[in-house]
Length: 343
Image 1 (cartoon, rainbow, N blue to C red):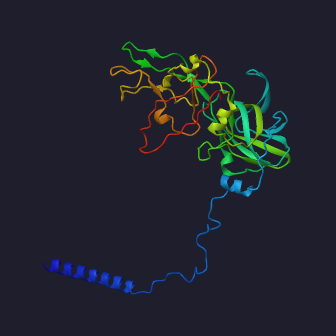
Image 2 (image 1 turned 45 degrees about the vertical axis):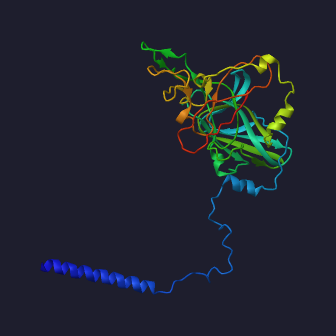
Image 3 (image 1 turned 120 degrees about the horizontal axis):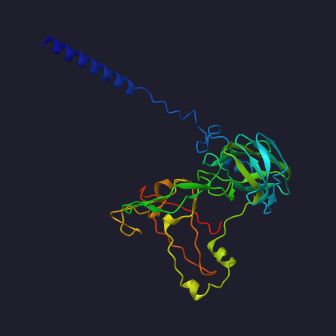
């Protein structure tokens, strides 16, 4: 009992001390720092705390620059290099092309007729290697224009190695993925998707240098260009530039269903055909067997990934495109895809 009484007394003393401390603290004068910041505009951004080397900062630094409409070809065979760089002859349908291996650096001189912003555009082929995307750092006149120019990515091309097979139970077996080594074209842009349009690079009038440093994967170039920065045209402008004739009755009444799982090319080997049993409206459908009936899903969620389908129409004309899809991975979010017709 004595020990219990002693514990109660000690606890009471501790609580009383804590209460006294709280009372004393509450009686202190509160320093508001009003006088310290009197006359200071706190709505402005604090200089020195912003992230350096951003693309937005790069654009702001050249805010008054023009956007010339002329395109400029770069002579890729007049170059200086470090590492394994060489000119291929009679390569993949081209008389010559420029090969740059991993850990190489190649610098081109280009005569720019008018100072301003340009897009960089390349036609390339990724030869057999590790099967991952190629990465290049871009330097303009020996300097990195902005931080994200360190990682310009270039995709590969994958396709099915053979037809869909079935096992002895009638279940479909998807084919393995194999790589296609073919020419592609691409703007230099943000692979994360935060910047929707291709990067704009500022060039002075006269002689400039473009350096491509290989971060990984070998690459073969057949064309490098500076393209004038243009704005996307509106749908109305697009229609106005197309023929007014909508086509014959055959075109108007034409309809074809292209199954999503029947894609012909894709940017990554993970974008293969899959199967889904959650909806009876998905075609083809089976409750007992595995049948391939869709493509994409959770593997088709990163910016820059693409899937391609090939099909034929009876004649030139206007056609509607309808897509049956589903986004059930993030509630309330919207999926966005950019559509290209014949590139």
